[in-house]
Length: 179
Image (cartoon, rainbow, N blue to C red; front, side, top):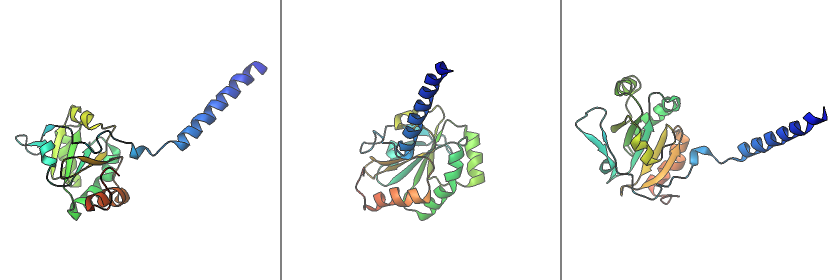
């Protein structure tokens, strides 16, 4: 019986350490991005609605933009969709979508059913552009300044609280870039 006591005590100690670590872990939706303060990655993607047009880094220059990486297979993307539609109605910033690792037919059907919050949508079917953006998983949203620099990154579903607290102050200039 004593020979099982030491391994059991070790296991319990390890479990306690892991649980404390999980509890103290930083907020996963606010992981720092190496892109903050830098120019957006150079990219060119086909436009979901018109394959002859492109969505590119140049699309993001000259005005504030919200880049939203999403996919129809993503549960959280569905959860944030209504908020994106509300943001579009505010008309503060255009929303540029990057449809990540998805089928074009699925994306078109999704948008027909739920509404389209995007000004343009680039299709990143193989996921290579998302890698350049440092995407961990959908949904992720990036705030892009008129100069074409990444100002802020949010991992997870966009909510009204996140939009009001993190994005709008940066667009209105009440929070400095990269803050």
